[in-house]
Image 1: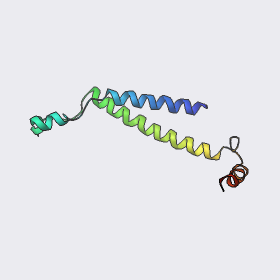
Image 2: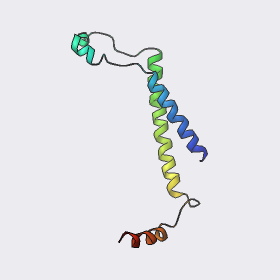
Image 3: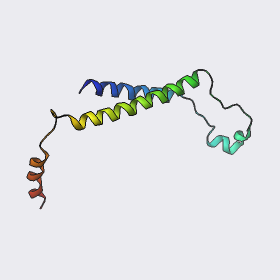
Length: 97
């Protein structure tokens, strides 16, 4: 496991925690049954800590995507970890038929 794998896991755990910290943005099925969602003029704008958590979640999600792309690019061009695919597939193909 390389250093960027550890950073990738840490960022993933931060995103999970931040997602769990966010409150529900709708009343769900109970609001639909009781008519609680009929107040169209209610302030639904995020303020204070909710807004900070939302922006942090978005930022870490972008960072997660960037790290995932960088790992896939770095993993595809690494010559030290490459294996000889033709030899292994030539050995397996006769076993399948």
